[in-house]
Image (cartoon, rainbow over all chains, first blue to last red; front, side, top):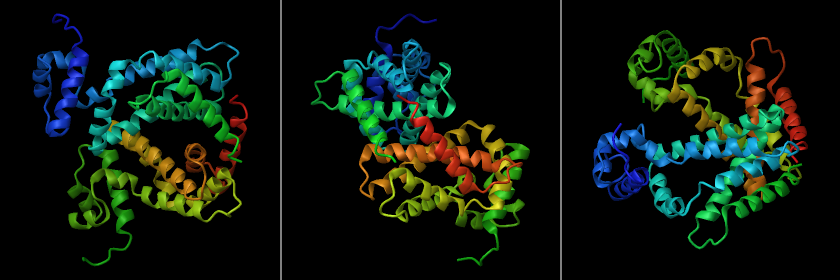
Amino acid sequence: MARWEPDARLRLVRAALDLFTERGYDDTTIVEIAERAGLTKSTFFRYFPDKRDVLIAGQDALSRSFAEGIASAPATATPLEAVACALDAAAAILTPDIRELGPQLRAVVAANRELQDRDALKRTSLAAVLADALRQRGIEAAAASLAGELGVLAFSRAHSMWADPANQRHFSDLARQALDELRRAIATLD
Amino acid sequence: MARWEPDARLRLVRAALDLFTERGYDDTTIVEIAERAGLTKSTFFRYFPDKRDVLIAGQDALSRSFAEGIASAPATATPLEAVACALDAAAAILTPDIRELGPQLRAVVAANRELQDRDALKRTSLAAVLADALRQRGIEAAAASLAGELGVLAFSRAHSMWADPANQRHFSDLARQALDELRRAIATLD
């Protein structure tokens, strides 16, 4: 095991985003990313299995937060109250660093079809994480799937408001608002 | 433009599924698929842009059905009533041929990570088609997104019941049942 590199993960993400912005995602190599970050290729592979994983660096952490948030909800919580706990747990990993990288990340993803596909998959996978965690609380399958989809819709909406450079509000606050909007929307479905 | 080949599309799908089953998706070439179907490579490309598109041959037709079903719903239809119209419209393209190919198709997809990813994307894209069509009816964005997700959940559930070889019921009937189950699940969310 090589020595520990302070902030190596974040340095790799920043370097990758800079290179993807400058020359495009497809024309950037892992060696170039490592060099730009002042690290080696093998350090890169200690943090990421592949180039595209740089862009979903936060997904595993987000999945874990979602699962832990649901598990930590009070036993009496309704499915949507448990989802609110998942969104609160996610707030903890949405750091200022992550927020600052947001606009550049979105521009890179918008410019590449493969990355857009990856983004859609991330969404599906996060909904499944929420639904699984809800089923483990004994919530029936249809309600769990539905609450999982609602959680991801609320997360996406809250995240795009939070990532807005003009935003001053905390993610948890925006997530509650988004979830309340969805609750009101539910009432208009039928 | 080459001459018309009767049932060329279905022959290509059958040949591809047989080859994917026999030797795996990755180890099957487009030339081999065309040969097995008794057609040429250029005929293949008249129907499908790429190998993996063989497996989502029905998706464009399904997207169109969804959009048309929503557009054809009565002006007084609620969002979920409009979604029910979309599911009815989809029933028209779920032919016995499609149903017969189902088990083989699912086995091929289950054996390949790339194809599973593709399947997840299909789901996201269908939800977006429903949501877009609902917004065009003047339905507010959050309700439209939510109803789109519900429509895809109902479609998936109804489709897996319909594709069961033991099933005798019509897709529309199963879709109504799935949508009603989701309606009841909604009532348990909070």
